[in-house]
Structures are given as C-alpha cells and as structure tokens.
Length: 157
Image: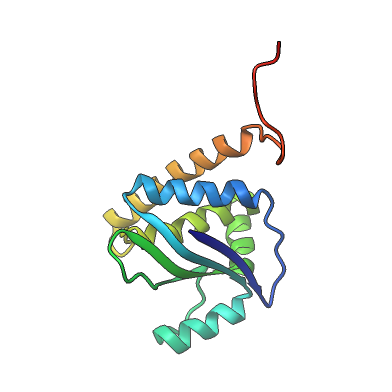
C-alpha cells in the first residue's frame, strides 16, 4: 500500500499525513477494499480545468476528478486530482473550514473508487452520508494521541 500526496501549481502542507493515510486505508477497508497505490494530486483550478477538458471533454470547473487505475478486484488504485482553489471557494460558500472541506473531498474521491456514485439525488445523499461518516472517523483519529517513533508503550510500575 502506498498513498502519495503531490502538488501541481499550488502549495499545500498536509498536517498529520500519517494519520490521514491510516484513515484512508481504514475507509477503504470499511467498504471491503484494500489500497494499492493511491495518488492525491493537489492542484490549481486551472490545472484541474485543463484535465477536465482533455480527459473528460467537460468544460466546467470542479473540485475533484478521480481516475480509477485498478486492475485487480478488491484492490483500489487511482489518481485523485483535487482543486485547492475550488476547496477554498466551497469552504467559504458553505461556511465551513478549509480543512473540513478538504477532507470531505479527499474522502469523496476514495468513495468513488469504492463504487459510490453521485449521479442521482439518491446517490448524492448516500455519498454525503458516507462523507460525513468518514469525517467523524477522521476527527476521532486526529484526536487520538500518537506515540512518537522509537518509543514503546508499556505498563509503568
């Protein structure tokens, strides 16, 4: 399993990347999948717009595009492009934090790879429900204490 975070035409320092990777792994497992190679590419609006035109022939802005690269059943592999500009705009419009909107979209991409759709109103409602469940799980994980590397938890006497 390898989850990678890249940047194109933007800068984003993802805090707690180890916990975020664990969260993504657990999210996939909760839906019956294992993670192979998963790449998140954080990019500018223009960068994602060009991908939308080139690969999907859509002439619209979007916050995320997910490309499924899986070739084995039960193993998720893919490239997920996320517009940081669009995340900022959406967070402002929906009066939420940038971080919460970012993680909502990050989970959204993985949920697509798990087979969830957002084409119909029913599908959109289920996708939103799954995103909310994922965000609650992440919140719980981020609040857990982490043992620094090189240390071992044990009984203190």
